[in-house]
Image 1 (cartoon, rainbow, N blue to C red):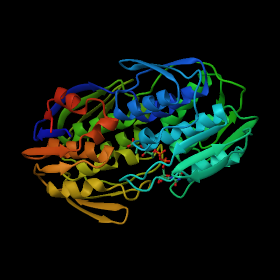
Image 2: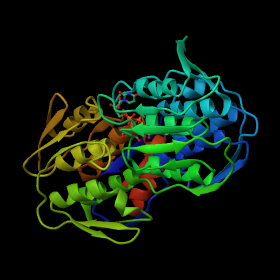
Image 3: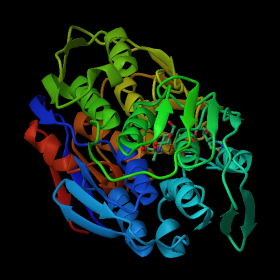
Length: 419
Ligand code: EPZ
């Protein structure tokens, strides 16, 4: 298993281009199952997660062609049983349920495993499918869904921790081919949900209200092929903005969508960093001593849970007392123990991390655990004195396209080591 080795203390400067969004590409790739026509999707990032999704589509019978960031998928004839040995490796595989139900009126997909950021239930997804008239059974570790026909319904998708992103996506995709109108209340408002709705409307769906808490889908008989450009990855962009804050002297993120980054930009400005926003780029630079911050993760447009670990890395070397409260995945703190091994002063109190900024982190061998925690350990390594080695880099490869190469372009002393 590869490692990433960082020689910390280098100041970053320059610019990088953001890749297409992983969390938009995954549901949109799944949505191509809703039509027998070919669909062409551009700016699909080259990640293990997107590659897993393409493998699943192939297993289901779709023809898949990939030329760098452009993918063409033709799901002329498909099976409705997703293969366990691929599905088990990526929880987001669950987003093939909605399109399979919409297209085939049945689906069998293995139950998604939990993961280190916490229990990953799909009760809200299944509640939505049942509201549309589907019968849901869990059998032998598989979810089996069957619906003689799908009928529009009024569905509230709010859960204990707020809206569900992939749950909203799944219900939209199933409802797109249902009879009648579906109303989703307490829908997720993430930009990735909007991107999916825009893609589906280009396929002939009739979806209104994406990006608000109430989404209305008027079912149609069938959908046709289309072309689409995936939106920029706001979490990759945010991760690089934090890298620029931690040890930059002027870093610009290009091909971004600044309107998707307001909560992250606000947080960095509240820490005292200078942020400049252009049409498709955001720049961060130091502006005197950084200030501590108390922040909580919320569903969009609040501060993203996928940026929580990266903020822990930044605040660990920001003088003063800070805190981060995780309201979406309360257990999403695998990075804290590893950062403490680098000298960070952090204590967990339930879902809140209390952070006392230190002057200096010290490089150490650390272990990646989940996608965003791994990126946060790389950020901490950029700041730390000496060498930091992040093992289990496959976590990073799930969601960041060439992270080490992009950081190297900004002046980091970073290399991928074949273990
Ligand atoms: C999406 O996951 C993202 N993944 C996650 O990003 C992101 O952290 C998450 O949304 C929250 O924003 C993709 O889009 C592929 P949820 P999703 O359903 O949809 C609970 C990354 O790092 N819940 O919005 O699976 C759930 O446990 C990944 O890129 C239920 O209780 O998350 C959580 O506490 C990590 N029942 C909260 O809701 C359900 O049926 C939000 O989860 C579904 C979810």
